[in-house]
Length: 202
Image (tube, rainbow, N blue to C red; front, side, top):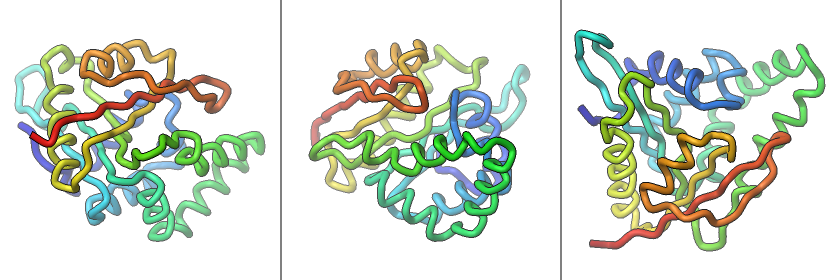
């Protein structure tokens, strides 16, 4: 069943985020930061997070997939940081204390919106994760379609999304869903594919 994220879903969403979004920085900042991140996003009108939950004999009840969409990623991250600045500062300090070379990783994440800039496109699909036991069931199509519907209510008809070039599953999915490769950008000693999709008002 498709529905909006609720606070009770956050632990399962954190698990999916941590397990299925390779290279993600936020899980490295700890569960307390991740919980604050998703609690904040629930309250913002610049973003929407949808979850897919099922009650099955194999997987049990709970969230099996989720996706986050924002009308403006740079504004979203400023809102998240302004509301959780002290927690972000503390968790970043703890993370960097373990290895000072991690400062670069934090800086690249903080400046990500400039890196992923596409003229005329602010809307972005930020996070998508699907439990491996629930793939190939068209759940990704349903999640993305719901995000496009939400963007239409905001008067937006173009959206971008990035994924590592090495993430073959995500790249194949995006291309199948009609996203076109706009450019490639370096990010954390790897390369990101930046995709764009334009969709109809109808």
